[in-house]
Image (tube, rainbow, N blue to C red):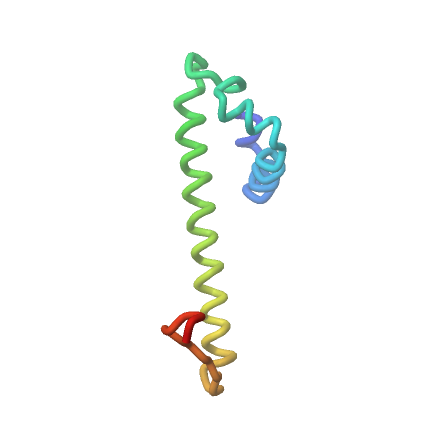
Length: 91
């Protein structure tokens, strides 16, 4: 883990994305076969993994908010016809 700490943040994110795309590796990682609970770095790894997941969540919600803002700007002054029915298919 110390080798990764010396990399810039963009390179670290790239490595994390590539690692998470390897399904077999991730199965072993989740199964605690790669970084085991008795490993001295296990606690640190758990904290870093939690931070990574939290950063992903914040990034995703930021992207959604940005998209919503773009739609508000692009379509805020246009009339959009929407048909909505509460009756269902039997009406």
